[in-house]
Length: 441
Image (cartoon, rainbow, N blue to C red; front, side, top):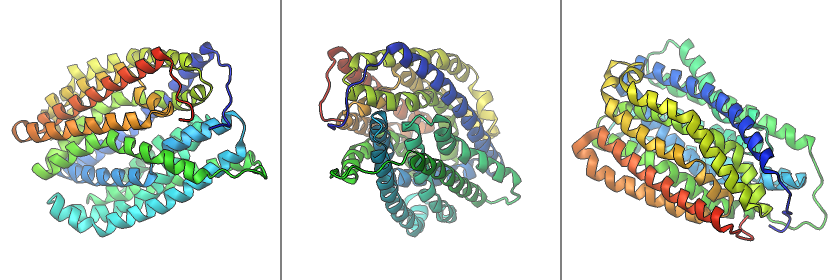
């Protein structure tokens, strides 16, 4: 985009901001993860492995539908809003966010309606779990507020309102969900769905309210001669980013769906608990991404590829310093961690250890996926993520029938590990060659 102009940036300032921001992000995400952990322990202990499995299937369907409804506009908004805000084009910030909200509102409503009316087919014919029907009916309501909360958080993150963004995206849903579940006396799994829906609505109201305050405070009239079609720019950028988001998380969905189809609801519950524990390590990368994404977009627009390389190296060092001790803990004491969810989960210690090994590759490569997206290489990242999902699908077919949830864990760990290694090679080429794709941003 022509309206980006070069900026002189000092690397020391970047590392200090990343360190400070990452620690704040990490602290809030650790709090959110702890709350999510408590919520899942409550679900597992109150409703058992079968109830946890039903909830896991429902949340997977809802997350997939929400991701489709976002249309990649959360990532696109970070990229475009950060760029516009860096040159103080606040009129563009306002127009970008309004267009994004309207698009996501329409798509998420359509997605929620689709899930609601297909609940019987999904429950009885796809997963052979009739008990899933009512839970899907309730949780389909959460698609709209979840999508809007995610979009508001992306916009807030783009303008460096990190605390507000993390509250809307990561903290409020598990916090309120846990409080509602603790207060509830209902012993049916549907109460977990009601808690999730209520918390999602609260997060959406919080995030959108704070974003609207920012927009009104920085209101700026649009130039009279402006004829930019920002909705079109967003949509064009959103399509590959939606594909990337879907491909990134489809690997986990594929495994959970395969277990749900070939196994029992209790198998889904056991695998999902192991995956949630292992994925705690991945939050270190996510926390770092929330800081570096807008910074990388601005640096790339300014043509400062060398600084991007410094940010990558610093980020990997920080992530490994924090992640390796936790990884050792997970590998040495898997039975203890799993038994917190209930005695029937303790047998999945090998599953957890395999998933942790996969996460170690994620830690060692750092924010490579986000760097590719923010430097105009969305289609390359999409192809890499899609290939990874295909590997997971093929390996799941090969390993699941004979090795059960351990085979599913191996399929996921191998697929995601290959994805991160290839992405790291692509980023290394970008940093070493110093290539800027003009017009990509």
